[in-house]
Length: 152
Image (cartoon, rainbow, N blue to C red):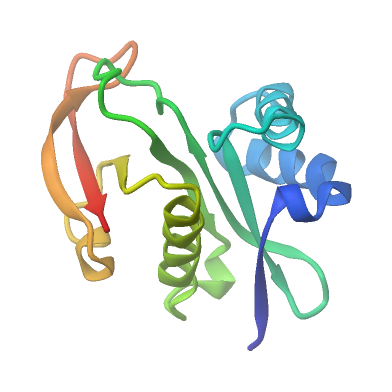
């Protein structure tokens, strides 16, 4: 199976479709994704950034963003990988790892050397070089969630 990882700033004609795709996967308002994507396209800042994975027939099969804060109380732990998702039919093929590497490399090119990631997963991200950092409280939640760090 072949696929292509792209930054939305390099393929802005996909932003409407990408915003809809992320909305369907995560349930957050489509407009919130679109606003963040427009900010990345129209802004010279490094954050936010959005990436999508396209199948060989041009369908979005995965994606993720890098934003200032992924809805948690540790505003000092920034920027955050967010909304990482690979369609079920394409999982267990290393696509998530390649997408994470792509985002990390893009951030390194933008002089950002540390990323954070909020997740309930316990072992998935370690295989891609991420390390458990601390527990944080998600906005509106009472339970703590795992925060990972990736330095390069």
